[in-house]
Image 1 (cartoon, rainbow, N blue to C red):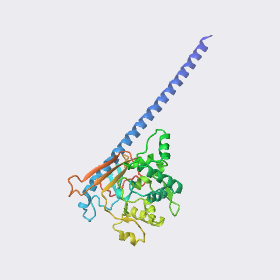
Image 2 (cartoon, rainbow, N blue to C red):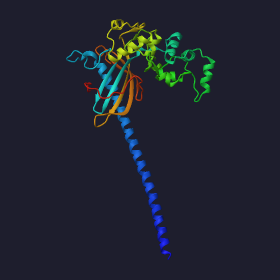
Image 3 (cartoon, rainbow, N blue to C red):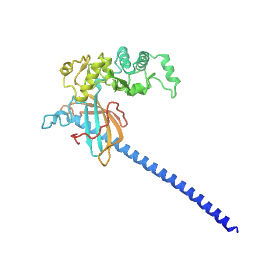
Image 4 (cartoon, rainbow, N blue to C red):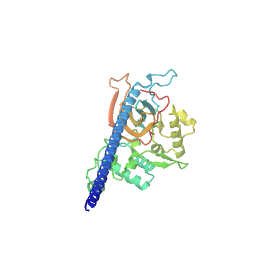
Length: 335
């Protein structure tokens, strides 16, 4: 008479054991799937990084070749000096390359307090903050130290001392009191019609290799144009024209009724190339995997210089606020 309960208990134990094993198997399968997806994402990210760095290197080569090679239509085969962007199509994806002349930026080591304050004001839209950051920049690069700034740097973790000498890298700005990543890398503000557009950060306006003006109108950032006295309407008109095609001469600027004080065209030697790459799936559709790489180079006339190219900085992990990671572009030049 006791056999039935024993058989029932054994069956219940088997069912509980089967449920436990099923839970373990489900958990293991979920972990394996997550690891496979993670590995796939990491591999795609690495491929996109290689694509971006390869686009930077190919962009440098195209700039070296310059306008010497022409298409049958007479246009440039690779690049011409006023061209601010290049689109490249590779078998694994597409890349958009920005060519940013450093002479289109203000020299951080030579700029006056008034120039710096106007520029920070154009980026932050905060007068008090602009004055504080300008004072911090002047203290950082100046030999006469202010005790309140030094005390601040010694009170945070990790502690450090201000250089009290010229900026060697623009990234030093991130250490200056009052600076934030949003101010350095850029933010979005509404235009006259309420639409958001990128003003750029101080990274796009200041440089250790920069100029004191005039600035290249095909590469200067909106914030620096505003700091030079251009009206919001003029800045918007310049940006709209640059999206269509670069200005070929300053006469085109005047013909559009744009007042552009402190602007010029060309005459650039040091450039920052920033490539934003997007992978393409096997069926040809663009994926969401995007990476950006960047390099700052000094480019000389290859017909007059034995070593026309000098790589000054290289960033394998950069970020671009202006570049829209491209989808495949019909007719793009394939390297």
